[in-house]
Length: 544
Image (cartoon, rainbow, N blue to C red):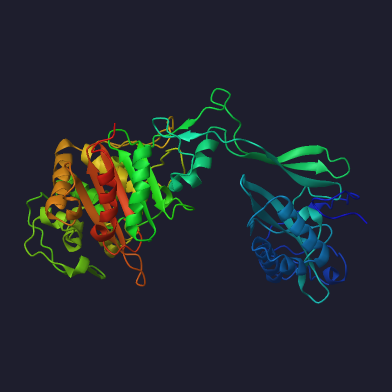
């Protein structure tokens, strides 16, 4: 008996079946292929617009079970359950595949052997290397009771898996290069927990990361027939063995890691970057392992977004800092909006509205901007929503055109469908106080495809004055005792009815801009404020 395992010795090659493709709509078989098919009961012979729904349901159920690791259940949907379970287990375990994703794709086809072929895409994450993606076909055969089962064969797992050929995973032993900060200080010694998930990716960008391949081999001889998938980048001979230098600063990174302790165990993240060129000095997350929410998170930025909203209003001449823009407790625009702690400031100037972060005042100015104008300003002047290349994966923001007046009101205060993260908001802050957008960077030499226009000097001057007043007289007073002329903006962002608000704070001092978010921090000044205070207390007023 031949061994059917994809990772065991060979047996006899099975003959390949020819396939005839039919359009999925309205096809009636004109051939007789056995009893039920002679009676006109083939998968396309029911007079409907596609294959038997029961067949497609079984196909999707098999793929779902396989994806979820329910291999006994998947195997039970086949014509050879014992063999199927053994092969599926051997395939995923032997190739270190973790959590495969299998999805039906394309039109079903009728094969000459009477089976119904359902194409699918397989995305196989190979642990520590990457994802192996390929397409295959799931054959289904109608049973005597009218039900359907997957007609088991090795080639459904992968088209090249057979009795004579199988797959083997080869890993290449590599020593990742050292990753250093901007001055050459090593970042690879575990002192900076937030960087641990990023070090391999930073090293991999130079060809120093893990490498390997999935190879098709002859079962009898063990010789390689072909390479199916390769992982990892070949090292650059010019830099092989050289440390990977980043823009990070060990002093700032250490202070950022410690500052997140002020978040009281809540999920939080922080980015500090240089205003003059966008170089990231510190990037930290709490918890330190796992998802890099600082650069890849998707959050409503709340009132920190009023930097962009204010820019749009000032650019258009729609408001001046000394204009009276009333700040009531509530304002209804499809839904009731309110200020934090339902505060109100009757007869407030726009400057007061900014420093006290008055939502209702900003929402009342929505008619001064066209529906897509806020997003256009964000993209054109701040680079938000353009594609950034900083040396690590990022989410680069989204400011869609509001669908209605309620959503437009929400977008004025950084809610609705406006999405950002600390990297974006640190960059927004740097742009607001300098007038120039610089694509952030963690490593040197990244392509820059962004296209932006500078903010006028008078707008920058007004934004800096508003942010300074927020520290001296407004919601960011938590930073008022620190040395240096600090400007800031707090933010409180709603998440859902059953979660506390996220707390935000962005700030600048000298040539550095900082952004912090604390999930369920309730208020920006109360949760993110102490984090920023801790950071700025521990570092020089300006980086070298």
